[in-house]
Amino acid sequence: MNLQFDIIEILKVTMVLFAVIDVIGSIPVIISLKQKTGGINASKASVVSFGIMIIFLFLGQTILDIIGISIGDFAIAGSILLFIVAFEMILGVQIAKDAMPATASVVPLAFPLIAGTGTLTTLLSIRAEYNIVSIITAIFLNVIIVYIVLRNLNKIEKVLGAGGIAIIKKVFGIILLALAIKLFRKYTGL
Image (cartoon, rainbow, N blue to C red):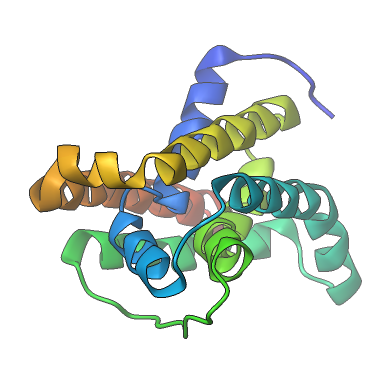
């Protein structure tokens, strides 16, 4: 296991996870959720999503081994999922739709909105590429960003405006699309 501290690698992984988690692009959904439920517990949502990501980072491979799927297979499947998510972000279409239950801070906010299938797939995919210290640090940095966004939701929405949020979502969609293509090419040999 590689335990090096590499700031450039940490920044790369942080940006990838930031794009996948897409807390900025999720602001309209989070605001709607907050309005429907009367409030969001930023601390609880952040801690639960951090726990989910860390547990899956370490146990996800074991789960795959039990069912006989390699990390390469999972990375290819993950790259296809990321490709779809990136298209949703770039084109502003919704391919997948999840029902939104009444509870807010844990379901659907911590899971599946923050630590959802895209994030979990990405964690296993990037584990094949980057060292574990970089990934854990990136998860921690992203959870801090998520917490800050959740605590300052109304202020952020006012500052960015609808146009700013749309632009940020498109930019991170392109980053995510590039990652999906990179992972697909690496594990398919194309």
